[in-house]
Amino acid sequence: MDLETLLALDRAHLWHPYASPSDPGPIYPVRAARGCRIELMDGRSLIDGMASWWCVIHGYNHPRLNQALCDQAARMAHVMFGGLTHEPAVRLAKTLVDLTPEPLEHVFFCDSGSVAVEVAIKMAIQFWIARGQPERHRLLSLRSGYHGDTWHAMSVCDPVTGMHHLFARALPKQLFAPAPSCRFGEPCPESELAPFAELIERHRHELAAVILEPIVQGAGGMRFYSAEYIKGVRALCDRFDVLLIADEIATGFGRTGSLFACAHAGIHPDIMAVGKALTGGYLSLAATLATARVAETIAGGTPGVFMHGPTFMANPLACAVANASIELLLEDDWQGALRRIEQGLELGLAPCRGRPGVSDVRVLGAIGVVELERPVPMRAVVPNFVELGVWVRPFARLIYLMPPYVIGETELARLCAAVVQVVAELPGLWAQEGRV
Image 1 (cartoon, helix red, strand yellow):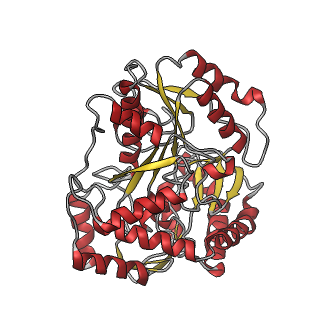
Image 2 (cartoon, rainbow, N blue to C red; image 1 turned 90 degrees about the horizontal axis):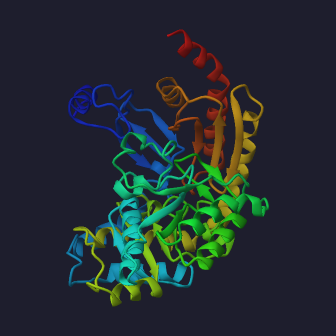
Image 3 (cartoon, helix red, strand yellow; image 1 turned 90 degrees about the vertical axis):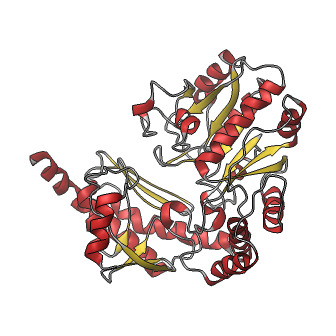
């Protein structure tokens, strides 16, 4: 299919994420991708700064992951998981139990990160139903948090920055504590936890669980906060007998410099959701892990089974490539790679500090963020990045980088240089917006 025909058909029939169906803005057709580069149909090659929404940690078209898919497809592409099982799923479950905090022993496979959050919330609610306390059905979350686009996942996202304010009247009403202001690596005074402590104590008789993104709040604001805050939350959940759900979908598998972000705080959740990088970006797969206490309580209640069952749960292709992706990660010096990327981001984004319109520059692990004083003029900025030979997709007031872990120093430097150049051009772009 030629480029013009493809674009015409795309505009006529496709609805892209967070975009208007009639005027989606610039769309760039991709012909291929390999390593850290995306090849467009017009022949341009872009260095990928997004890892395709943070999941392609090993880069594109990795021969070992390709082979894992081919080998599994030759045996079995899919089989229902109700009443059946298979080696890729069993191996992956054992690996996840071994890698995640010790009390997490039971694995429920899901279709996507949002669904993993839905499953976590349903587990928490069913836990209290089995305990004879059905009134405990509400969730306590944090402002500036983001947990996905499905129904209950939307309900625990920040009502403003979580992108779902349009549905506020219809969503279940949850509770929100102020976003932590103590930054990563800093102490967290008792006063910082006081609003959270007041909410959990006052509503403990109706709370099923607390849900948070440990250390890094992702699409709600790309905020890095203190590990001591999470320790305090865990202690308060224990004190008031409220379950703790850790949403590690964005942070899991090394992105923050630890294999899982909970490790920064040395705590374990009662329920954990993982996804995104789980398959190295090859197929959609997520998992919700729970402690024996959660699983056994649900099993001991009525109806004695967990009421959820996705059609493509534990898809063998996805599980096989996930096994290969995790093996690849653990065999490599992923911690060294993350330190190298962190240093590169620190050095490369430093010139943005003090620029007009920039409110903050921060780096943690393989995450670099330039926070602006005003929203990014997306229709001008994204094409500018493409012209500079990089793929960077900002949102709201944030220009950020989350590259694949295999990115080279030269490619990383070019990514950062492109961000610095675009940031320098922003005052002019904002002025043009004002004149339109």
